Each structure stands twice: as structure tokens, then as C-alpha cells.
Image (cartoon, rainbow, N blue to C red):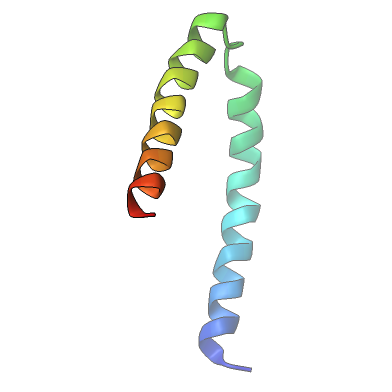
Length: 60
């Protein structure tokens, strides 16, 4: 087994072990999303999807 692959796997495992408790804490302390928050996400997302579709159609 390559040492680089082993080292990368160990680092990824350590990152998961150290970040998982912090992620749980952040989820517990976060506020609930409102409909305005979802609209703020949905509009740019739809714009990006539309732009990607436009680019795909322009290449054909």
C-alpha cells in the first residue's frame, strides 16, 4: 500500500472524528429557516440551473 494513500486516509478519518462533534453542536444551535430564507436560496439556484441549460443548448 502506498504511504501517501494511507496518510491521506488517516487525515480524513481524523478530520471526521474532530469535526463531527462541532457539526452536531452547530446544528443544535442554529435557527430554523423561514420561507424568506428558502426563497433567497431558490432564486439564485434557479438562475444557475437556467444558465447551465442555456450553455448546453448553445453548444448543440
